[in-house]
Length: 159
Image (cartoon, rainbow, N blue to C red; front, side, top):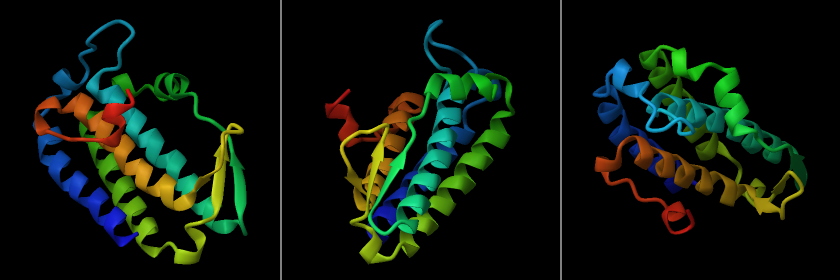
C-alpha cells in the first residue's frame, strides 16, 4: 500500500499549487444551475475523505466484513454550505485530511487488506481496492476542477 499512499501524496503535490491559483470568486462560479462549482466539488472531495477515513478504519477494525451506509452527496454538499465557505480554509482542510489518509493507508496491516466492505448492500470490495479506488475518485474530480492539469483516472472510461 506504500505505492497507493505515495500516489495520493503525489496527486496532492501536483494539485495544490494549481488549486491555490484559483481565486475565491472563480471557485464559486457554477457552470450550470444543477452543476457544482469548483468549491462545491472540493467540498465533495472533503466529504469523500471523511467517508473513506471511516471505511478504512472500520474495515481494518473488523475480522472480515463490514456493512457501510451510502453517501447522499448532494445533501452533504448543500447541508454543509460549501458554496459560502472560505476557499483557502477548504483547501487546507482537504490537503491535511488527504495527508492523513495517506498515513492511514501506509500503516494499514497487510493482513487487513483482504477484509471486505459493502456499501448500501453492494457487492463486497476489499479494503485494498477501496483504498486504491479513493485516489482514482479524487483524480476524477480534480480533472473537473483543473481540466488543464492532465489528471487521468480509471473513472474516465466509466463516466
